[in-house]
Length: 379
Length: 242
Image (cartoon, rainbow over all chains, first blue to last red):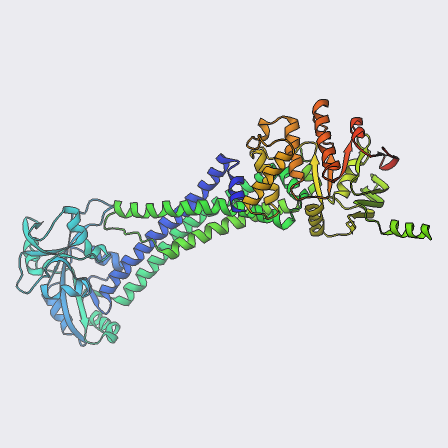
């Protein structure tokens, strides 16, 4: 039945090609956009792991959420603020962080992010699980050295021993951080904070990492800091997680939605093609019935054909979608890493099959119900 | 005594096709009511070659559709090889068509994009047979109708007579007992008509198929052993030819 169906759909090559193309576009969109959404989700999750159990303190009212926090580069948090936060009950440790964005001109690439942090506290920023790809970690006493993310190293073909320049100061690269999947780290250069402050000629911080004595009290401690220290605001992992999860959910829904609409239009194409096929092949349906094919057999034959059209489209669409996802990852290097997951591919294929079956059902039902006498003498 | 035995035999004799007072009425109960077939009773024995003749609109094609199980009668009995077909479900009628009847049409009804072999094999495959078996059988059937060397040609590359041979081969795919022809020579010139009729007669005399052909072509009568003439849905003449 399968090869017979294949033979039948080949009869109107141009029409079949266009119908398959409709499905290909829809399914490719689902796979590519779904992979991007999965990549964004993964990136956000990796970033969230870094802030879990921490309180982030920024200057101002913090009303802009994560994005405002990340761009509050002219931050004026100083050592007095650190001391004030340290004095709050339940605070174990406060780590000042300097952010500096380098080469921030290409919207489609992740900006290079220069991070200044106490060399012994780098683990708080990049996470203890992320090790080194090459070279060594920052150590106590390090001054004009840097460790850089893997994507950054690949972008400029840098390796340990080379130099990374910030505002006319050269920092010797002593290590390359292994790939983390998040551009916060992969496109970062991490430099001992005092050296970076010297290079930038500042003595302030953009952000403070606050480690609570007991992780269970994170929210309470954050509230206390907000109450006791003026002109700052706090944000906790929980808040960030909620904001990020909402954002990722919205992105996923939007991207999959676009793909689903495109694929649905493809499904209408399948229905149209099959209706045309049933009209054109009326006499053939009459012959099928005359030689003993039951209504069910006729129904099945046409359903197999529509399912085949949609599955060919689904297969090619998945392939193109995966290629597209890889292409986008390469083009937007470091900014978006699309992740193709098998459940997404399986969903896309099942969706394609459903489109074929649903789109083909009405025409197949019409074919099955044709009166053999009328069909045989159709002019 | 002898008479009663004869009667008993006659009572139990199975005909290839038997109809009793079969009627097909369109638009029943309306002013436009028309009886396309109006009380036709016939008995066709196994191995008969019957021509049903009549003018256009006489009801002969409607009658053929009914004995071919493509259409149910409004009333009356239709018995195909001992099975009462007039009250059967669609599924059962399809089963009878698949097992007992082969159709030949005036327009051949071949699939234009398929080769001769594919057209015949298609009919076998649609009933669920595997590809290899279908192609083997299709090839044998095409050889038996004299098209062994034309199996790879599409209908457009074949003459009308050749296309009708392909259609005949297709009609034989289900090893039917009965072959029904609807104007099988209607689209052919007289010379080709004769070769097709000879082929059909051979199937009747040598292979034992029961053949019923609906036609208005008087030449067909020369090949049959029985001619039934229909007019206005009624049999007006029935004669056997020795």
